[in-house]
Length: 202
Image 1: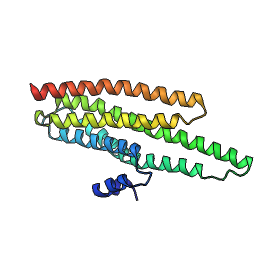
Image 2 (image 1 turned 90 degrees about the vertical axis):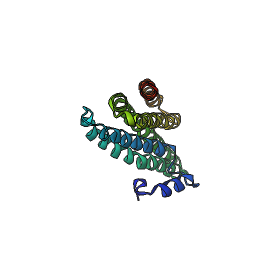
Image 3 (image 1 turned 90 degrees about the horizontal axis):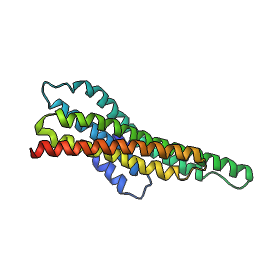
């Protein structure tokens, strides 16, 4: 059963349990999905606007974010499965080490996708907070915060898994990309916050 099919009560109960998944990476994906939904709501509440062309992309991003909730958990499960592989012989040890590294790399790539998704949402949110319905500016502002949470939450998971990679080139590339996305995301998020407060406070 996909986490996307859980009720809010079921998901939060599972999150609070001693199960390893879902965890922070899945929550980062959920933040992305909530952000996309809020942005779409503000657009639909805004009459006679030029923002409607973003709704199709938002629907795609919302679905992708829900998929990332599961993908993050699945990536972690693959890491755990790799650690449980037999290691009695030298051949088994080598096979296990390769499997762990492959799983760790995938576990770093998945949250990087969450970061990219969050960045795309911020690019849309900055337009919506500026041009959207004045009565829904606070909603657009919250959407921006959630999109930034998706980026920052994803980054933690990129870093923790990249740190376990023995291939320094792969690890460095993942870290560098995450830093690049974070820098752009924080700039957009600051602009969203500035515009939201300006429109709310007048």
